[in-house]
Image (cartoon, rainbow, N blue to C red; front, side):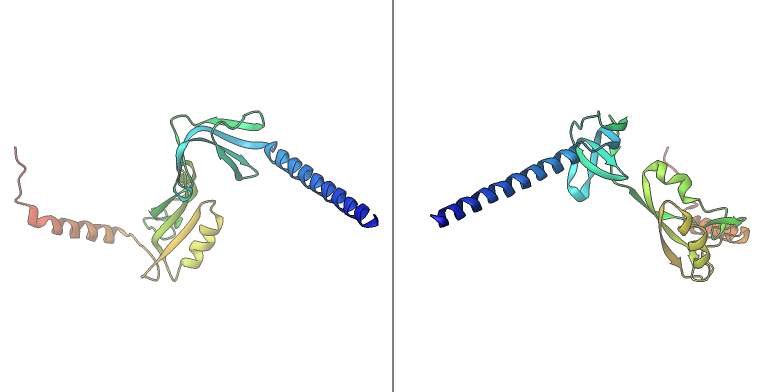
Amino acid sequence: MNMAKHETSITRNRRKVMLLISLLAFLLSTGIQAQEIDLLIRNGRVIDPANNINALLDVAIADGKIVKVAPGIATEKAKKVIDATGLYVCPGLIDIHTHVFVGSKPETFADGILSLSPDDFTLRAGVTTVVDAGTSGWRNFPLFKEQVIDRSKTRILAFLNIAGGGLRASRRRKISMIWILLKSLMPFRNIRTLS
């Protein structure tokens, strides 16, 4: 008889533990669903090759992270809602050929005014990463890193130029490049268009 009471007590304790676990799971799941959304992007064509997605969906963002991608996310908990009807919503794009070693030197790319400041053109165009195509060399890369890479919101990857000082563009070099281009077109000087 004592054994039967003990088994009944164990069964009751198991039920209580299972009930508590179920209640905890329910509370956690409703807490996640009730999470306040900072930004809700609705009705956009979501293209995400990494997750094999190409559909009209909503994207919910909270604390700078995507918390849900699904159709018809409720707008009640969203602080801001953007209607992306007719627009594409995708992960950040990568521009694989840029010159972003911007500086104050006139008529040069490396540390000069002929390069573009990455944050001036990237983020508004959906580009989150750029690859600098050899604007700096091994000699001036530390300056490039300090002056541009470390201060930019855009992620910057860099190819180093074989020339220690990186890419330079003086007037003389520009003229010689134009001359080389013109000489390369010489074989075609007698070609006429058909009329």
